[in-house]
Picture 1 (cartoon, chains in turn brown, red):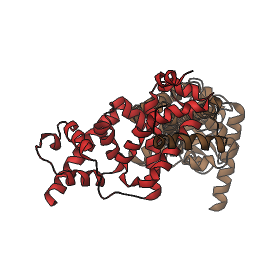
Picture 2 (cartoon, chains in turn brown, blue):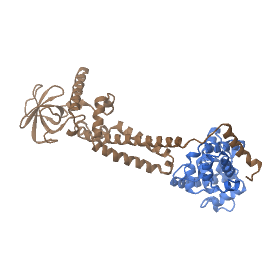
Picture 3 (cartoon, one colour):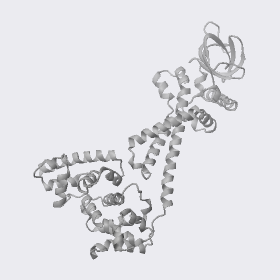
Picture 4 (cartoon, chains in turn blue, green):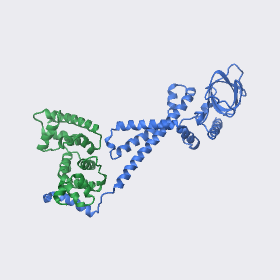
Length: 273
Length: 192
């Protein structure tokens, strides 16, 4: 090495320090572990984002029916239909996954704008698949039944479906006849529901004894109604499971549990009044 | 192996060899000491006697983390990245901002001639003092970009690897840094 002593000094001091402090190159597995930990955390964040997307799609879908009948304006319907909790989780998951990906060894080479777009696209794609597979409904039903903190966060109000003045009611079908059926509302009242020529019932065959349904319509004005005999004209009938999602998403246990919760809620409301 | 053989080896080969033979790492130190010292001086002229400590820290980090070296980039970019991070860390720790950056005659000529399409490259006579002051007041991020591009002669790809940003971002940073320099230079020239 043809260098002057002065140029040697840094080289010597570095090598001396390496020897003195017994420094050794960190093993490859140390870096691989770090790299994979970041990658896996980014993937987990993306998975959470996809799940949040599935829940968002599901909740918007099931709220769409509810809000158009129970909220006063379009804006309040839109505001209430958006599942803010899941949107917030989605936002945090996307932010973290992009940040984590940029922390990988070659992540800095990708433009943040494309990383964000990629993360959003993947969340929407996988979220839609999860929604299509029924994960949105399953997770939502599970959380409604098992996590007490979840229900208030999602703005789901049982009482909305026991409001005759607003033209909505929910309950269990007791008897069905040709043009009418009797419904035991969750408030305990037995209500006769008339099926009109224009009534829409989805899905076909929904009206069977024991089915839990939601009905949109109005209290009949051509008959004398009193507290014991209320006649209700149905415009639209849908199953009530969880949030009133699709029939195939309902399971008997969840349905009964939901009805029990609704009854308890009604009792609580009356007690408070 | 003979000294000559080691001296003819590529940086990457030397680094790989350094894992087994610590002494081989000395060749890399010798190759990069003056280049990195010059880079640090251009980036933070107030370094003074701390330069040796910072340089030592840079090489120690390179040695300890040598197995994290990404072969898709050059060793040169990798060690410059470590140096850059160390410089930024030093600046933050010291909260030091130079009042002026004395580039020296050669650097100044190189800088003025390579700043294509900028105010500086079209002027026959430029104020050295205004150049030095303009560089000094620029944010570290933009000063690094100008130093790497117009004094170190780095490509956009290399700059991306050193600064850990995408290639497209480097182009934007260079454009903004040139504009900022021109504005600041004009301001200082008018007031000098």
